Length: 275
Image (cartoon, rainbow, N blue to C red; front, side, top):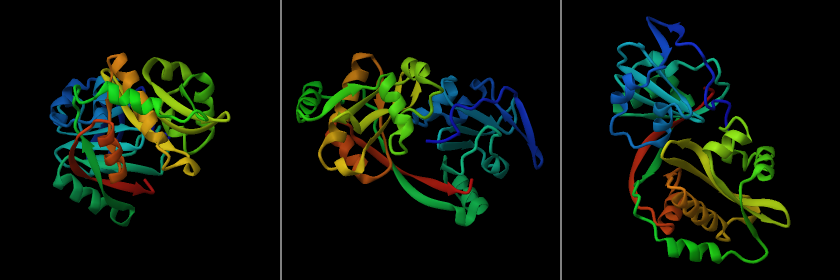
């Protein structure tokens, strides 16, 4: 999915940008208040030190902060152009999705990146632990035609996922299979031994996972994504993990509703190409 995975910088001070020092936060408690009320599991992953990293304008008294994980960067606190323009040394991505906390951050992103920034709408899904009908989800899983095989992502499937662009999103942010096995969780559908659909953890936080789901193009519109989603949700519930869902488009919103989620609201993000 990206080379902007968990991050691997070991130093607190990184480099000077303009008149401020961009610093990696080793004590994320100092920026927790800046992200207060933002129900985004990728931010929680960074704050908890599970995955991703947080950077700020000042390590001791930060007023502006960026949480970065995978293809996403979230900006909170006082808008700061130096922070928006900062790219960690370990991040080799040319594409990233920037999510502003408010209109002031959004305006700054547009000003700095100009034509490189594409404004898009994404869709937040409510995080409700009691929203799921387990019996309905079990019926969805049982509806899978016999010619398909539904499996948890084990080492074999993990390695297959890495080899194909359309499926590597499911495991890309984990350093190796051992880390995926420890932190992540996923299911996959195979036909004649070939991977055709799956749902997995894009990222992990202490209380759950952020779901990434996709189907190989020739097998779309057959209900396979629905089956994968249902099985993954059931697996999460059995393990006392929350299966968080954030929708890129209205199709994803519709699928989420089919599985028991409820729509919350749309929000603005910027797809930055040439990051």
